[in-house]
Amino acid sequence: MKRKGTWLCEKCGSKQEEMFKSCSCGHHVFLEKEEFEKRKIAFEEGKIEFQFNDGGRKEAGFKGTTGDCVTRAIAIATGKPYKEVYDAINELGKREYITKKKKSKSNSRTGVYKQTIRRYMEGLGWKWTPTMFIGSGCKVHLRKDELPSGVLLLSLSKHSATVINGVLHDIYDCSRNGTRCVYGYFSKE
Image: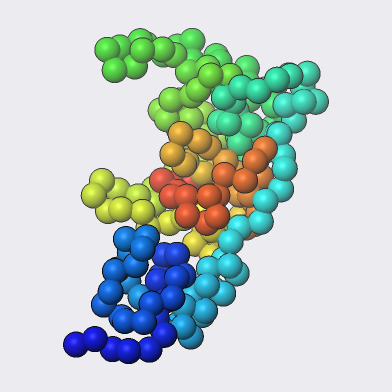
């Protein structure tokens, strides 16, 4: 049964004349125009604000670009000086073992393993809350309406960032327009 009317693709918003016809983007879910507009407004309202914050990296005398997102995010979330967090992570990295799966040690500039982040944050009294499990799919996105209030250190795909009361603090907007999946977060107990 084909229903005639104005239908909009849920993914790209293109207009369709028939409800059960495939869209040019390959999507198959269509909404009536009114429902599409309601969802679009709700999506826009839930987007997270962005605030540029380097966590004190420049003040500490560091220059250039590097993969220091964990160090930066921890400095922002905890309020500790960037250099203090930098040195602490490198000190924890020195105690790590290299294995077949783990080819290097944690380093503040080039990357920090999840176990090292967990050890450091739990040592400060922060609690880990997972938001994604094996086979569950993404349930929580980097959006202010899907995250609790307060100070959160987020674990994202190959990135870490801090959200403070619904505002993303980082050197760039890593939210992917509200579609980036949050694997879990640390919060102060």
